[in-house]
Length: 514
Ligand code: HXC
Image 1: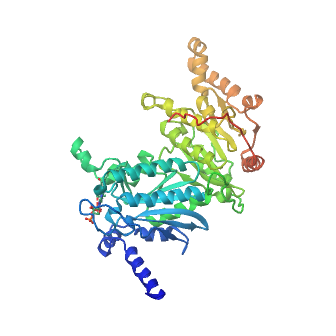
Image 2 (image 1 turned 120 degrees about the vertical axis):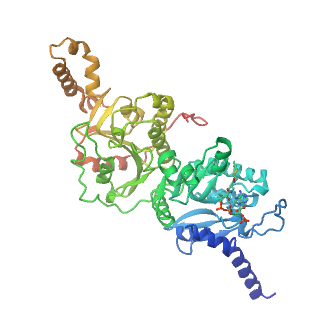
Image 3 (image 1 turned 90 degrees about the vertical axis):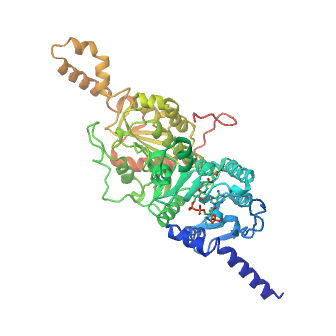
């Protein structure tokens, strides 16, 4: 064979493999509103940047009619590429080939690209669209999953790991995404569950659709398994590109700095927070009023909305922002909010992203439901995450900071480097109403007009404690600042903390309350 013929043979072989499961299967995939695995990679990565490996890998299974069965790429495409010039390792399961099911060869391709990502120190993006463990391969498929989970865990905190759910992700397969840092879902396309509708029907006698059980909205709004929800695949890929720009390649690097931009002038920070501690506001307005270009990229927007977490930039540098959301449940901390914030804080800490915390909350949510749901151990996660974090930690107390909420929201006592308070800050053990009712109970009861005595005592307590100056007098607050000075104070604090180096006691690892 001449070289020309050999090249022609390569081209023919590759074309056959690139066709995946064939025309019919591809038609079915497209008709169900999904892109093919190859188109997904093409849409996500920079043009012409994808380099594929292991296209010629074949399965070796023989049982249940598998002998000699051609499964192009064994149902998964793996390789490297760039996103806005930023290198990534990527795999995409191809549902047109045996339903994207995971056999041994398929799993080995994934674990090989995971090993690459870890060695090269670049993010890993996994696109999941699969019927789960390849039934014909039995325990070998289970072994494959186990080896993926093991690597997800080893890579945790070393390289960013992103999971994109673009089809079914069923059974134990869900646990790779659950071990990664960010899970992206798409309306009507993503389906994640441990046991499917058929098992539920058989075991529990209940009817439920896949969508109701574990569709994209369920994962983004109810379970909290997903971090980003998109209307369609193209929007999902845009979200991934945005995320990648905020985070570093790996835990030894800083996120890329961008040209600084001031916040948009239509968003002045003064006047956002109402003077009455009972009136709500949107903490995202404060974030947008102080960050570059008023550009805030929210994580888990639709779940545990009483706390807001996400990425922004200050003078071009990425920061992770955590803020109580007074317009949802008055911004209280509850089981889910603590869980959401703790995980985000740990991601930022692992990847050298400074933390900015904005405080306005009445405390932890009281009630039997929360106590029985474990608000003690879940609530402890946020204390642990803030205390453990060694990245620069800057806190701004906007208004209420009562009781356990004051401590939990990155107070000085949990190691905040800088704590600033607005003049509207109220830092106390509890709100004035509750406090006055307890400590002046006798005076109120004995008064000729108990209600006016109660109001007087509330005012007395408010005047004495509902301000930032007692905490500032103790040095728990470093500076009382005007709202308009917030951006400048934050930028300065981040600049002077650039070389922060905090040494912790030697240990194998901590034992966080999860
Ligand atoms: C082998 C599979 C497969 C699997 C799908 N296929 N899932 N082959 N092993 N797990 C094949 C189908 O036989 C079919 O092949 C092709 O993929 C497309 O599947 P369809 O059923 O035609 O597609 P659709 O109607 O869209 O339904 C998709 C589906 C369904 C809902 C995912 O295929 C399904 O329920 N699959 C089984 C899901 C499952 O129970 N997986 C095991 C979970 S246990 P042909 O040749 O007909 O085109 C598990 C344990 C992991 O994953 C534990 C890890 C710790």
